Length: 117
Image (tube, rainbow, N blue to C red; front, side, top):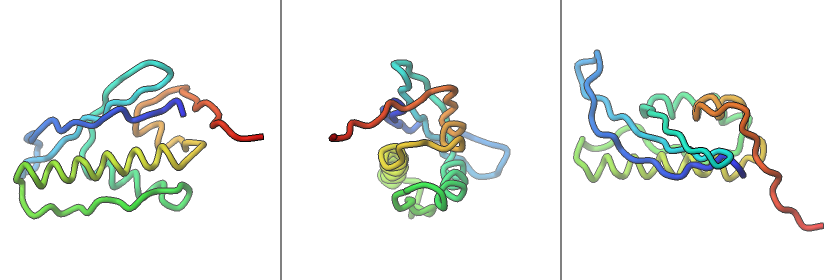
């Protein structure tokens, strides 16, 4: 497949207009040999999951609540979201527009999977 999540690193806590800190994740995407990065909040991953779960094969979505804002808990969330996104890319030969939009990918077609004759 041509669309691959290369990795996802935590950017750290950012202050939003809300009174609580917000965790933002960096998603690195490789498409047709080009790499770009998008930043997403957990709620954006959750919204994507709700949109695609009826039409795509999706792995279990990581839980929303982490026990605290300790680095270990945040790293577990990051890993869970990375595994989720990689699972979506792996299990779906044809990626719906919702996923391409989420990853900010334009005109990136996946190469056909190798199949035995």
